Length: 312
Image 1 (cartoon, rainbow, N blue to C red):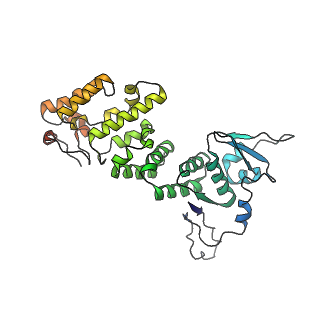
Image 2 (cartoon, one colour):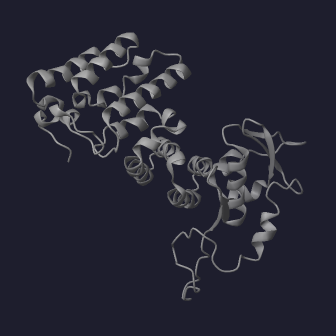
Image 3 (cartoon, one colour):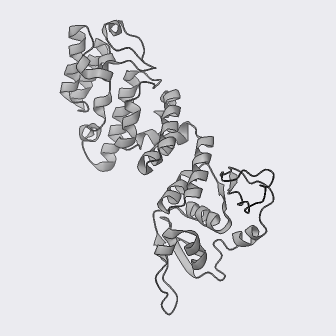
């Protein structure tokens, strides 16, 4: 857990205080906290003087806040809470998609301009920051995610990056998975990736994993998706399966894959035929391009000497 605070702006004409970097988000608290911060933090989820109640998360937890503070700090809440209050007690505002812990972190940031981030919930805070348009909080979360990135977190972080178009985070996650491919492919986060998030991984030449293992992982991913979506495995796999490099498999491995594919359709038959064509012609098929190129983790096989496109 770390407390992240935005630096206090330096007044015009005054030199910046020691330890503060102007216009830069710092991933830790610097200097003594502002005197108002403890008082404002005490108002987070405090029913006293609150004039708005949120019902958040699947647990429908009540969270209390102060309308004027949220509205002046965040355009999302300004729009959400902008309607005139009628007589009587206002109705709770339901926000069912954000977990209570993440929402409380957002409130802490809005009240105090600092936030305590935890590894297990930072992606949910990041998601809320993006959805609510809180750019400073988003940057603090991104900094923290990169700092704590590990095998268990990386696929979930990749999914968030792809969902919200966070390019630098996506690149960092892919580079991490390329270096820790075998471990990352065994995580629950990998099985829960969307097709859009899985595609850039399967297109990478730098994965440190052999193609047999990658085919197996992709099949497991498709099975999970098929169970969740109640659709055939082949249909779920269709957006990504063409990125598997079957030409890298030895004849015996390709035969075993073909037999398994008859029992459980996963790969289009024509894709397997294309791989057999490379074996029959004893050369890589230029039309397949990268699909004949070895990855960083591809184990050597006798027929690889006939492929035209080595790992680059």
